[in-house]
Every structure is written in structure tokens, then in C-alpha cells.
Image (cartoon, rainbow over the protein chains, first blue to last red):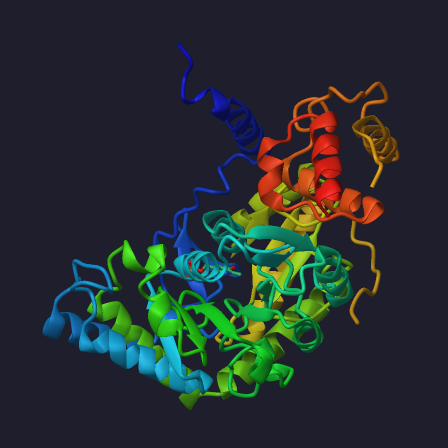
Length: 406
Length: 83
Ligand SMILES: Cc1ncc(COP(=O)(O)O)c(C=O)c1O
């Protein structure tokens, strides 16, 4: 009889090769104890965290911790139900109002994760007779949403509004509804979408536009409303999806929109309806973290200064860092044989970053993906850079001092 | 449109052979993932190139049923005849 696990043989082989090449499983790192937003204990050692997406450091916000404690004491630790049954408490509606007001939108839906927000919105909006147009480098949650939807799905070339335009025209379906999905900042590479140009294509073709600001919420734009704010095109974005799990430091997802039909989407959105809502302490902590984000715009300034410092350091070392300076900085290596030992060496020397291996990377080369925080000190960044230099030397990774910054 | 499955298949093979990593002895019955060692991302990227050279839209859900080069060619011909 066939084994359910015979399809795992390839994966088992790949995983043992990765472990053999570096000594540990990079996908099973345990943070034994977070000491602050920037330092955690890993394998008994204090380790600098440069791969946590905790852009503003708010996972350790005192204000949010106190709010969570008070909410748990007052309301309990769970809702035990779906948003459309017993899972909506006053706190949930208050947070939705607050998120909508922050984005200056008519309404907001709060989901249990950002993954579910994409899954839910994309599948609920794009139906059988509609077209979904996805950036080729979209996050897994966007691809999965497209699979849950009955729409016809077309990919366009990454960050290429002209290619999107060409593909919409090629459909030759002027009357069909079309939903274009892009991300503000791409999670693997730190690439920033040319949202204004996408908005222009959307207007010209009569499509709808959804922007996933998962990594750009709290990060881009004068007020932190993301890439659409930064490019001055919020009015042309129909739906903004995002997550609380990065800049706000908690967990949960949302969608904001001015379309009044959002109220109806709540009743036709499986990842919203068929799962329990977020517990009161998470809602309260998220709300407090949003207050912190708004009260401290200097966090955003510091984040960008830190990103520039780390990026400039990589360029100086001769590492191949992302072109654009953003809080996600990917260092591209040429081969997996270089990347695995280097990632392990970084961890041994005291820096945690994310190891991304093909095919999960856009161009079949491995990435050491770093994310920067507002709470990193200049000394921590310089220490991380020195550790990168040492690890590259120890692993014979060539440092070619080429200037790639633009 | 008068494209045939054979014609489109030949075009796809020609396109594939321009990639030096693809085995030289491929034919229409080759399985794209197994025989050509394409991962899912490589398949999607290749289909994007086919879309551009043949001026056709191939929705992603169609890929679920495509295993061989000839399957892809038949799908393209079918989509073009509807277009
Ligand atoms: C672009 C993008 N969208 C959505 C998500 C999902 O967010 P969450 O962690 O809240 O599920 C992530 C992060 O994992 C992401 O990178």
C-alpha cells in the first residue's frame, strides 16, 4: 500500500543535506528567552536579533503588556468563537474602529492572522467570473488566497506595472471584474512596490487594487500608513490588507476599505467566519501598540536610520545587499553551499538572521534575510556587521567590494 | 487561430532548449516537473514566457492539470481557440 509520506522523501533528503552542511536545522531555532526586542537567548548565548520583523520593537512595549494584562483580567483569555457568532466583544469592534480611523477608511475587518486576512479577502472578493492579477513574487498567503478563490489567476512580472497593463489588455475581457494584488514591501527582498504606477494602471483599466502592507504598515509613509501613503495614492487603493504581527508586535490581520460592501464580505469570507477570533489580551495589546506607534513617529525615523546604517555597512563590506534601503535587507549569496555554513557561523558568533533557500527565493539564489528594528542601537548594528565580516571570512565567502546601492 | 498542438509543442521545446540546464533530449511527452527537474516556481515562470511568446493568457488553475509539454501545448491551443 502507498505511504502518505512517500512524497516527503525529497524533503527529508533536502533537510538532511541542509543539516549536514551546517550542523543544525535552521528552521527549528528556539529563542529560549527574549531579553529585549533586540536580544534573545539562543543555544544559551545572548544573540542579536536581526530577523524578527519586529520593526518598531513593540513586542516588548510596556504599555501593550499592561493593556494585555488588564484585558485578560477583565475579559478572560479567549473568546471561544467566531467573529460572526460569540467571538465579537466590544474590544474587537473598538479595534476595528481604531484601525479604520488610523487609515482614514470607512471600515475595517480584523482577522486572526495576516495570513487569514489575505486568504479571506482575496477569496471573498474574486469570484468565478473575475480575474485575479498577482505579482509574481507574492507572499504564500496571497497565492493560497488565489487557490481558495474561484477566479482565473494571472501572474505579472514582479514590480512591473507595464507588464501588468499588457496582461490585463491581453485578457481582452473589458467587462470582467479584475482585482490586482501587490505588496508594499516584499518580505524576502525588501523591494518596494511602485504603487503609484500600479494605481495608474488600475485606473486606466478599471480594475480594483489591493495592497498588502504587511511589512510597510508603521514603516513607510509620514504617518506609517504604508506604501500607498508614501506615494500619495491612498484614494486609488480599494483595499489595504495588513498584519499586527510585525510593526505592532502582536498577532492578527486586518483589511480596511471605503467600500460599504465590506459589511457583507464578513458573511462570505471563510477564513473570517470559520475560526475563533483573537483573544481579548491580544486585541488590547494591539490597540495599545497602535497608540504607541502613533505617539512615537520618531520610531520610524530611527528605523530608517538603522536600515541605512546596516545597508551601508553591507555595501562597505562588499556583500551583495538589496538595492533599495528598507527595513528588510537581503544579502544574496551565490550558492547554497556558501549560505548554509555562513548562516550557522553567524548564529554561533551571535547574530540571528533568516536563511532563505531556493525555491522560496525569487531568483534561485539563497538569501540571508535581515530585518532591522528602531530599537537596535548603532553599536548593535556595528557589532552585527563585524560578525558578518568574520563569518564571511570563516566560510570563505568572497567579499567583492562592489557598490550596489542606488 | 490555426496553431496545432504539434506546432506549439515544438515552439515550447525550442524555448526550453534555450535554457542550458534543460536536458538536450526532451520531447513532447516529457513531464515538466519530473523529467526537466522544474520546481513549481520554475514552471510558473516558464509559463509566463510562453504566455508572452504566444500572446495568450494561461490562468494558474489550468496548471494543475498539466504534466507534460504536450499537455501545456494542448492547453495553449485550447485557450487560443477560445480567445
Ligand atoms: C507579505 C505578507 N503578507 C502576509 C503575511 C502574514 O502575516 P501574519 O504573520 O499575520 O499571518 C506576511 C508574513 O508572514 C507577509 O510577509
